[in-house]
Length: 297
Length: 305
Image (spheres, rainbow over the protein chains, first blue to last red):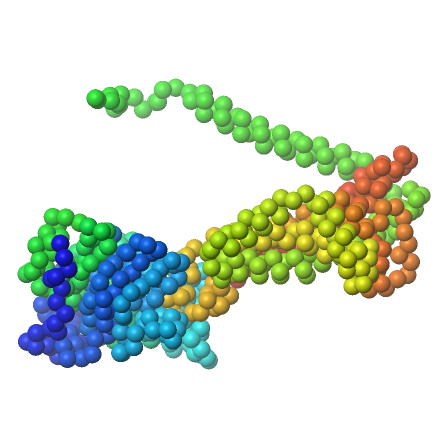
């Protein structure tokens, strides 16, 4: 097993399509979405560029030598069996791993040409631009309004935040459900609503990239679909990287898929990376084929 | 090897009769509770039945009179004043320093051998007998720092008590802070909050009820302490506060309610027995009052969510 199958090439030119801002019906689409879904032009600068990334917890190497670039205004799914380092890799992108003592990183993660791990980079500034939605909805024990307003406030936005709160809740498809109870606690909402509140909280600081760590794994199917529809909508404005265990979700909701596996040394590596439709219909690697067809993992 | 699980027939829904062991366990739990309550009510009943007549007979003068060698004149005004001032000293010195130490240890300090060593030793300090703190107070605050504290004064006693409860404040606050879920911190960092903002806006509000519970417990502990204050200069027996101002009293001779109780309890005169019971009732009332204030504060912090 070796990570030889990952290709760092840009997408073939024939795959370019009109920008994503055109109206596209976001009716529930259970087919593989990539077929009829335009993505940003291949020539555009990648949103994030990972080069030779390895992450260590103490002496243990959790992921090794990860290299891939993330297309802007597209949804990139990280899939793979448990222990393949998907979450670790995701959390490396906004320096969330810094909060875990004993974590160390090798390699570079480039964001607009700047290495996020350079000496003079402030992780707080990184996280302001690269937001995160977690596996378990974690609203603050504050009102719905204050949950959304928290990010802008700590980032120095002064004055009346009503408009920003409304806009963020609208973009998170939650406004109509909560507009009459903005003063109520965010923790009193249902699971699916809480997760959309967390998405509203993340987009209220206008990040460029949103990292989602299995955002729907604790939700019922209806709430899951809502989140997926929301992602399709958010992709017009933001770049999304999502970790998911749910292969249908990756197939339905993402434009690109990165398939990771755990090596003999228990370190995660990339087996294959490609457009989602290719990964699911025409995988190049036998492991990928076995995984997406449910034969292991 | 097959392990046979007894077949469960559809008709047998009544179970296998009474669960005697379960019932016995239930009964033991209930008896333990009743035993604790019995002791508590016996104590309170005994105190009130002996102290209340004195309290009623003497009325407010018992609360406003200074100590005296004559039972008919003796009161607890100096003890109440001393005890309340001790609470103020603990609140001013032990709470802020203890809570900030806990925040530092939990949120800022790196997790290395030195911090673990410090943590273990704070736990050890909390287990040191209070009389040892009394000796510490005597040698450092009463004698060593006499130019600052004025010797056997309320300042020396108050700081001794603050040092005594400091480890308890640190441990309970640190535990309350540690109990705040990591998900809450990560959510804050995830929208670009700094460590200071996460600590101030998310962690401390979430930990506040637990921190206040710890401070209430340590305050009760401080107000009930007798031995360290006897060593650190509290007056056993009568003394005159005269018409001194509050500041002069703070930098002067003092006593506290538990010391007054101890003093009266060892007097041979029978009259002082009732007086002792009355003083204990007052001590309990003062302690409950201090706790009530803290509990009201705590419920306020919970409601702000």
